[in-house]
Image (cartoon, rainbow over all chains, first blue to last red; front, side, top):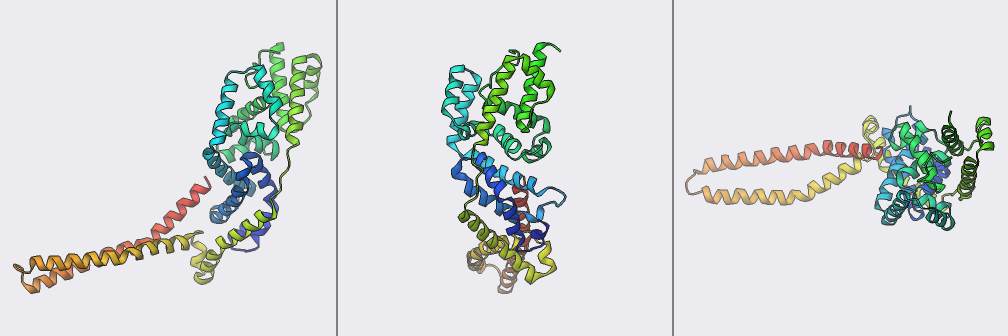
Length: 171
Length: 178
């Protein structure tokens, strides 16, 4: 990244080569598939445009995911389909019904279940489970305290396994 | 620790282990051996993990990589031009400054004929209105003063364009990086 900041024309190709798999995988799980390719390209362009503002003391991957995540949030806001899905999910979460959960389990594959997660839960889950990032790094990327990340992660897991409304008082 | 607390702690640990792709510790295993409900949670998490792990890893298509490289090169090109032509100055200018500067100068230049035409009209009309009761030499002085003030304003506006461009580019960068 420092080489890119100094204007080395080959530095971008090397960065792209090194991080393209992780970034593409992240976006694939983070946003609807039809937005993945555009957001992938846009993220790299933002990296190029904002390279002078990159602080070399930070990890490049954190900065990269932060840009990608911000763009994904914008994309998610624009997605009417996702908004509808979230509304549907919220109503299911608020009124947990074993028949509904079972039906959901049967109908939805993992990709769909991820897509139905509310955006704040999906972003932390994807960064933790698939990218194997720590809570502090995720907190830096999404801009919330580490405690909030932890709480969202556990909520995301419960929602995904169909136990969003499960009471801890029922061993 | 009550059974309720034990289950709560076990489930939190199971979820932590799931998120970190770790195997639950011996203490949790001992609890699982004696708690059917928590074993069910463990089973559900294992199924969920298998389901998530079955998702394709995803590789960017070659066409997308190529498109990205070309777009990045196009972004880098003007900056390299600035570095080459301006030396030290190029190193302190933020990315995108030249493009923004050219854009703003373009807008300002496009508006210039309109501004000049308007001021010419003002001088002409004012000259006709004042010609009857203001002496000719004073009219010339007034016209000269007006033209000087217009020139001053234009110098101020055009002179501030580089600063406006710099500010706009910096704001865009800070928005991008959140």
